[in-house]
Structures are given as structure tokens and as C-alpha cells.
Length: 272
Ligand SMILES: *[C@@H]1O[C@H](CO)[C@@H](O)[C@H](O)[C@H]1NC(C)=O
Ligand SMILES: *[C@@H]1O[C@H](CO)[C@@H](O)[C@H](O)[C@H]1NC(C)=O
Ligand SMILES: *[C@@H]1O[C@H](CO)[C@@H](O)[C@H](O)[C@H]1NC(C)=O
Ligand SMILES: *[C@@H]1O[C@H](CO)[C@@H](O)[C@H](O)[C@H]1NC(C)=O
Ligand SMILES: *[C@@H]1O[C@H](CO)[C@@H](O)[C@H](O)[C@H]1NC(C)=O
Image (tube, rainbow, N blue to C red; front, side):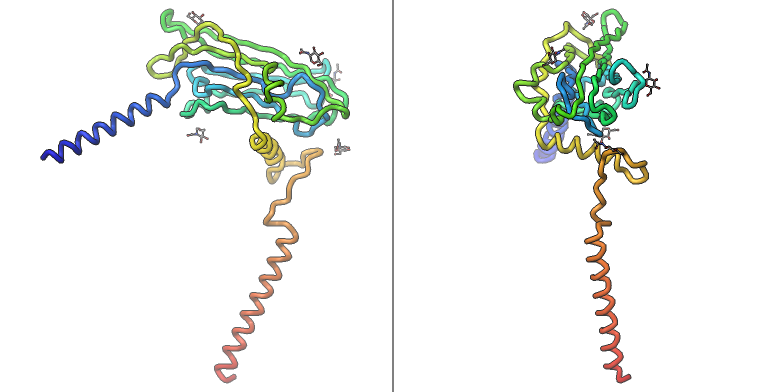
């Protein structure tokens, strides 16, 4: 009997602990920040896959704020010139609602600057969030936007995502921060306090993240069935490499020979 109640108490405690764990992993207040990590105010060599990288700090808060990022990009004064993008964007509120970790996440894209060996590029970007005021039972859309200008030149520097988030460079990153003071019961509506100071150095790109960003961009333009992407050499799939294929056909030939030998041996043994 005593053992039974101990067991019941144990399961109740376990349930309570799970409930507590859930409550602590769901983020409903804190500073939500977006940082443009790359490109920066600099001169880069022309790139077929020039990266664009933003970081979201405290990403689970994107959801109650209905956070949306819009961006556009053009060279010179011509917003429709080759390489221009007018309708870039991310909807982090839609795909961050299942995140349980507050670790920063990176939002990535890429574009082609090869057509402009000497170009002056403008990147416009905006962050839109909704300030849900419980007391006034109304919502307010807040938009913050900015532009960054960078140049392309054959004498420029190669894009270096790691260097862009290092101590000396990170401070000058463009960023917007929002102080979520609370969210309503369902966690679907965030109330904002006054704008906090930005902390862009809290988001970094290490060498592994940088190479995975570059690999993902190459993989995207090299998907089977895609038209060739100019100035990108797609890796040949390893299973189709000629060395492998030759190796495998030799192996196949050898095993066919072994089977023939085996059948011959069998025939000999049967006395034919
Ligand atoms: C961009 O960098 C150049 C060269 O370092 C500098 O002269 C210019 O003021 C910078 N512009 C901005 C907006 O920071
Ligand atoms: C802008 O670029 C487009 C596409 O290359 C071209 O058709 C158009 O004439 C350009 N406009 C100006 C004002 O240069
Ligand atoms: C979150 O949702 C996205 C899109 O629905 C999915 O791809 C991703 O795997 C989910 N992540 C987790 C941690 O459940
Ligand atoms: C959000 O709304 C609240 C309540 O109306 C207001 O006090 C606060 O200043 C607003 N925050 C921002 C960043 O607009
Ligand atoms: C890009 O590819 C084109 C041909 O598709 C070639 O003419 C050009 O030289 C290449 N540019 C660079 C920078 O490699």
C-alpha cells in the first residue's frame, strides 16, 4: 500500500517536473534582436554566391512579435539592373515557433555580383514587429529599416563571415532590438517595452558555420535539374565519380569471373 502511494507520488512529481521544464524552456520575455552580420560597409571581390546573413537573438520571441524581415538589393541607381532583388524576405515568426532554445539563429541568402566587377550596391532591409498592448486591446506594427552600401571590385577583399563577426568588426553591425516585457497567456502576442540598446557582438559566425553557409548556397544552385548557375562549379556526386565507377565495374567483372569459376568447378565436380 505504502509502496503504491510512493509510486503515485513519484509519477505526480515527475509530471510536475516535466511541466516545470516546459515552462522554463518556452521563452516569453527578453530582448529580441536582429543583426545584419554580412555584408558590411566594405569592398568585396565579385562573387557568384555573395552571402547575406542576419542573426536573430532570442529567436523564439519572433513568433509572439510576428517578426518579419524584408530586404531588397540593387547596384548603382538602377533597381532593376542585373543582380537586383526587390522582394527578399524572411518570416521567422512562422518557423521559429517550435524552437525551445534561445541560441541565436542565422537567416541566410545569397546573390550574384559577377556582372559588376566595379559596383556600388545598396542593401535595404526592414524589420517589422507587432507590439501587442494588452491594456489597450490593440496591436501596433512597428517597422525599423536601414540601408547599407558596399562595393565590388577585383581589388576588394574576399567575403569573410568569420572576420565580420569578430570583436573589432561586430560593434558596427546594423541591428534592431526589442524588449519583450511579457506575452499573453497563449504566447501569441508580445508586449514591447522601450527600445533597448543593441548587442550585435552576441551573434557570431565561426569557421564551421561559415563553411556550412557556403556549402548550402552551392548545394542550392547545384540541385539536380537546375539550369547551370554561372561561375559556380558544381561538385560531381561522389557515387558517379569516374574513379568510383571504374572501380565498381572492375569489382563487378571480378565477381562475375568468380561466379563463372564457381559454376565451372560445380560442373567439374558433377563429372561433366
Ligand atoms: C564606410 O566605410 C568607409 C571607408 O572605411 C567610410 O569612409 C564610410 O564613412 C563608411 N560609411 C558608413 C555609413 O559607415
Ligand atoms: C536598368 O536595368 C535594366 C535591366 O538591365 C535595363 O533594361 C534598364 O534600361 C536600366 N535602367 C536604367 C535607367 O539604366
Ligand atoms: C520546426 O518546424 C520546422 C518547419 O515546420 C521544421 O522543419 C523543424 O524541423 C521544426 N524544428 C523542431 C525543433 O521541431
Ligand atoms: C508598445 O506598447 C506599449 C503599450 O502601449 C508602450 O508602452 C510601448 O512604448 C510600446 N513599445 C514600443 C517599442 O513601441
Ligand atoms: C563567369 O562566367 C562567364 C561565362 O559564363 C565568364 O565569361 C566569366 O569570365 C566568368 N567570370 C568570372 C569572374 O569568373
